[in-house]
Length: 148
Image (cartoon, rainbow, N blue to C red; front, side):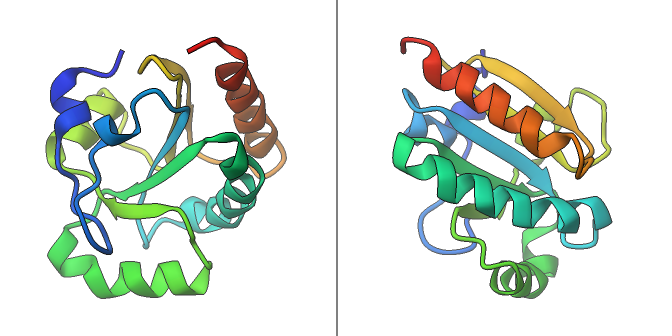
């Protein structure tokens, strides 16, 4: 289960209100930790955009949280969102959120498929174009099939 402080943390959003994972409780979530300078993240983002288009209508919320400093990277994150046509929630992970989710494994990207009850169904570290998108789909299907 995601701990309450992580669910309630106010992650700075690229636009508008802070992103609180608690606001998506009861929904299947994909939380992606990434950074603009990260090569694999740049390869993964178009796949995440496609997955979001496919799963959005089924109630899946996708949240991309950069691990960069929000002030220093505000411009590069905006450019990244434009360049990749990212239409899901984008913001910055608080240090506590990033550290708790990463559990000492600091390589990015990391993606977490979270069930309606707040349980992490599957965690992905790194990105492999031949494997990761299909594995994320499987995990989303598994989370969606569970009764919330």
